[in-house]
Image (tube, rainbow, N blue to C red):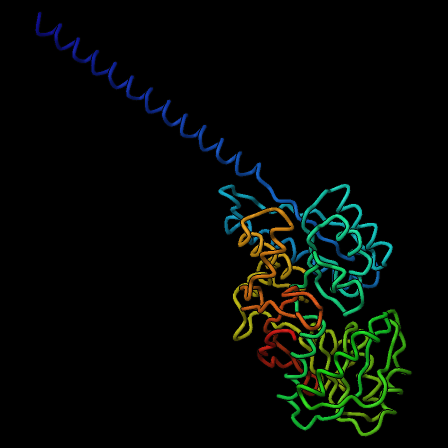
Length: 413
């Protein structure tokens, strides 16, 4: 009987031991889970709010509606890679956006909302010449703002904008890229007619373009620049004015939209002018083809991006793939967000003044277009506030879009 009793006691002790071990393990698992949840909650609590100011309505939305989607994709790419770690704390990017409505007063209103309602310290955008409407607001509040594109007008990026930066080639860098592509495809071009939007930039931008073409590339601008309104619909008078400029080898379009380029090319071809048309903007040749028509779509160059092409930087193609492989793709402001995040991380600070100082001391950065060079000191009068980076180009040959390859733009003067 003693043996049976001892066996029963041993079984009860074993059972009790197993139950205790199970409880301990369960409590430990719950504790670990609780700690994981607390850690996860803490990570979610750390967010860095970054504003974006884009024209999501009006005539310029043809660019910025696309840009908004890609800015959001780049923010997700950054967060998926672990976000930013500043002084030991992890931060995920939280975007807040405002619509500039393709008008300077709309841009100013959006800038005020970002500054006073959202209280952001960093902003990407606007694009085009619209920075003149937002820079005063951002500068007075010492908000670090990264334009997607500038046209070299006063107040966009100059001595009056110490907190203003540019993380895309425009406009001088894209002129360099387009000129190099033109010389590669048409080495005989030595004299060009220049066409540009009448948006206030011509007196400031075109003299710089003329000097750059002549001094660096041996290309002469013939006659006066031919201006056109951005909202223009009938470009036949513009084509006639360009065609009237004699002894030129090509037409060089500085800024503007695919609508302008396509219609100018169409008008020139209708007049029997089959000389090359070179556009330094990033509009796809597919868009130019749709406007100009197949018969007119020959000897046309743009700096349009060709997704999934040979030699593309992986980051550029990742944005395209994440977007569902939808075109067009420009990456003016998405590149600005990527570069801004890189500099904030390098500065190890969320203070715009500290990030500004760090940006001014950096020489290069890996961006969506490859290796970018902080530069533009002479052009903008600010140390390292602009970025020169590689660009691809496309050309239209007998109605077909042809990928041209990548151009090493180098630093912005």
